[in-house]
Amino acid sequence: MSYGDPNNPYGAPQGQQQPQQPPQQGYGYPQQQGQAPGYGYPQAPPVQQPYGAGAPMTTMPGTVNTARILLWVIVGLQVIGAALYAIAAVVANKAEDDAFAQIADYSTGMLWGISVLALAWLVWGAFLATKFTSGGNGARVTIMVFGILTAVLALVFTIVGVVHLVLGILIAVFTGNSKGKAWFNRPRY
Image (cartoon, rainbow, N blue to C red):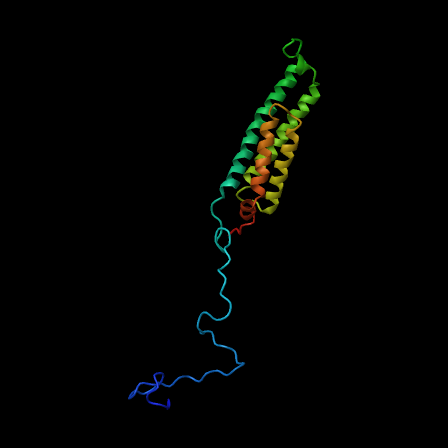
């Protein structure tokens, strides 16, 4: 190969053999993969998946675990509430004292009805609390509905209603956020 003028600073050094270079691709031909960096658009970083791409979630996120614990707290409160309403129904039959005059204003049937409702709410809450580890998106939606209904019903009852109101809202929020969605939609192997 000849580079022309031997004094050309860009020419081949004198006395050395030039290696054969592969032929260049012509204009309009597709480029090969090994082209130099810096041409074209920069590559975007890979999209991060929550809790790793494709890796199954093995531990429950903190907010979802908190929602499960709060659901068990509601179950415990329902046990106390159902027992208190059942006792109040029994006492209402025998209420002749002034101390039980407020309880006597309620009918025995209504007190037993509230006691059964509290017991049914207890069973539903305990069932949902057990679905945190194995339930899918349907369980998540049902837990959110339970939390919202608990908050709405808490407005009716005033004594423990504030506690149920706060717990119901927190359960709905913690299972409805992105971590709750990721947990209940995780692949199960």
